[in-house]
Length: 113
Length: 113
Image 1 (cartoon, chains in turn brown, green):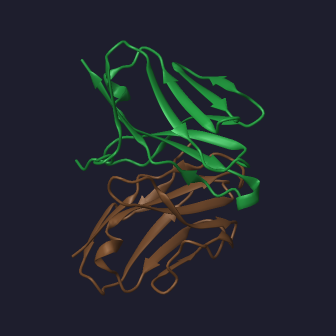
Image 2 (tube, chains in turn yellow, brown):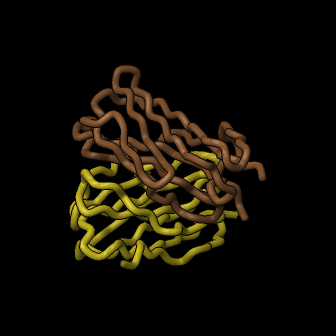
């Protein structure tokens, strides 16, 4: 069974630029999560989808971050404009349902200069 | 590669010894708990989970213990190997928070040869 796929794996941008990350969850997984992990810390949930609906986005900085999962499968996370403090690893995870164990992708490492 | 656990508490054990990693969780309503292992440059990897109607669950070389009275979770690794060196996170889910997966702060395990 293929795992969660993410791209790109690495991205370097300058502050105020825009960036987008893509995630393809495990086949059949209805729940998709985006996490932000700052170096030395545990992952922090940004947004959780159930199919193509948002379950929770309470910690998503909505003035600059957006995410969508239009067809209930792939998802994109966008930052516009980026700030220095957005430098982190962005992790995507998926689970069969909301009460199941999420499985994580390898992450996208973002550096904002 | 980058280090996930720059400022995390560290547990150092001799190869072949047993390791015990502890975690205090915050939400008394949490009913599902997961342990993840994260190696440098990778996403968190599922190790073992336990639901709140159990107090112990065993896997291959790993055991998770749950004490709901004091809101404490532990991960025991038998015959620790160099490949077990990583950062370990506990995570919790509860129905009253839309089953958001909330991570603890993590512990870095170093295995001495």
